[in-house]
Image (cartoon, rainbow, N blue to C red):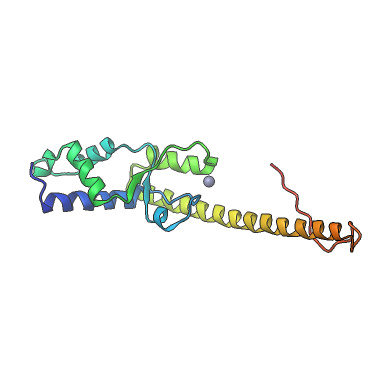
Length: 171
Ligand SMILES: [Zn+2]
């Protein structure tokens, strides 16, 4: 079939809508401008499954039914390169894993997916808060340790009477 403007627009709209429903917020490990603009689909998603989803949503007599998988995939890369499939990860916390599984297997309904996604985002926001707190404290611990070491070397203060804070971490 001829890939004209109408075909391209239909595919683009479908993918943007699909990503809006099933796209995952970035877990926030690599925070920069480029990765932030990317929408990730759950790792279990395949280009094939999305293509089938696209066809299934069409009218029976739509000429778009003729859009082959290869052409669909090519259009995807051309028109919406920011929509990507997440690579499988094994280092997610249980909550993240459950959300991901839920979005993939349980949330067949849009409404349900949106609700899950909202909770997932809340969870990630909390995780980010914790991470910031942790990072701030590791930095503080580093500075405090330097302070202690400095005074120890200079011998100006008794080692155990320094105005500093001790940090302990558990794994
Ligand atoms: Zn998590």
